[in-house]
Amino acid sequence: MVDAQVKDMMMAKMYALFLLLCLSERSVSLDNGLARTPPMGWLSWERYRCNIDCIKDPDNCISEKLYLDMADLLVKEGYKDVGYEYVNIDDCWASKERGPDGSLVPDPDRFPHGIKYLADIIHSKGLKLGIYGDFGTKTCGGYPGSKFYLQLDAQTFADWGVDMLKLDGCYTNTEDMAYGYPAMEFFLNKTGRPILYSCSWPAYISGTTDPDYAQIAKYCNIWRNYADIQDSWDSVKNIIEWFSQDKGGFTKIAGPGNFNDPDMLIVGDYSLSYDQQKAQMAIWSIMASPLFMSNNLRTISDNPKALLQNKAVIAINQDPLGIQGSKIDQIGKYIDVWTRPISPKGKSIAFVFLNLGTAGGPYEVTYKLSKLGAISPAGYNVTEVFNGNFIGMFKSQDYLNVTVDPSGVFFGVATFLG
Image (cartoon, rainbow, N blue to C red; front, side, top):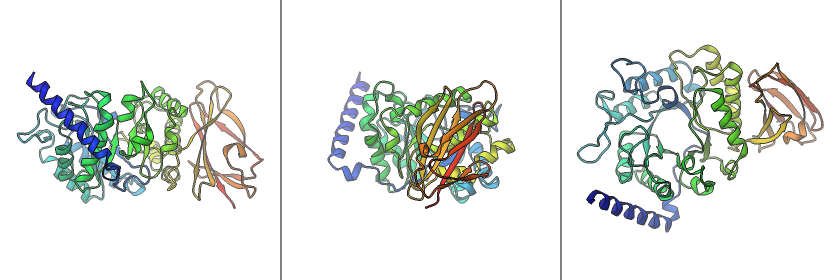
């Protein structure tokens, strides 16, 4: 009973803090200068989950070794050179109990040198370290959460040299999120260390109401909108279809400093065909999505590695205008049409014809260029993005004729000639 009363008092204090912050918009609004383009890196969750058995599985457990190995491979295998810079710890890294002073403590067996040691080595490679927390009383995996410890945890992360925080939303009331997530951003800013802030806030409330994305963007650099990705084409397709509906108008909120996050890239994992891997890369690029791989960089084969490092795909994802693309049309039953205005000044157009069908052979698509938004009378050069092949020069009234494989894409860019 005493514990419940103490927690009620702490919640009251947290709410009072939020009201105080609201009176000073300048002090609470996101002000870290980060994520001017979608962040890129590697994240452990989808592939490695909460594997903590370092006796039986030392190479794949959540441990210091795993993150140092992946950091080494980001550098040695060329991922860092094309933009993948974050090495992100996810859930299950901590001890089950906080330290005597209330601070989070990394598991001493799996992280024997501590998180600052890990951060220092990762920084020495020109990379950045991300870490996972939870706004609730516990993380989704049952480890200590940050509720009632927001300020202490923010300072702890800063002292360790953390560069990004992913804050999940298990074990809490969703009603508390509207002041809890902003409060954590306030405390992160207060540390003086630039820490990219990834919020799971809208993912926990979107089932009951349309989140206020404009409000969320005031406090979060990136945010998870929807369910966790799984290693299957059905999961990828489900996420794409959900994002294509743009419920709540979240597409319009995206821009430099603020991006919607449809979750990790599973390119190079077990389940996707080569065409399906291309489809995920293309749609994540068109949607200006954060690009966080969750795979085994030790064993990845050449084709998915080439897709992940494709400079033309990454250039569209990282376009400095930061405009999120969207679905604009559907051809027949299975072909979705996505477009994204890109530099210079939004006059060029990146586009995707996505075939969600699985039957038969390639689908023949005939589509008028002007319907993609390419309306300049000067015309456009059209190029296929993955292989760089020149398709031709087109006027706005001309038609493109392309083929799209089942559960695959044609990914193109119409470059403005004016």
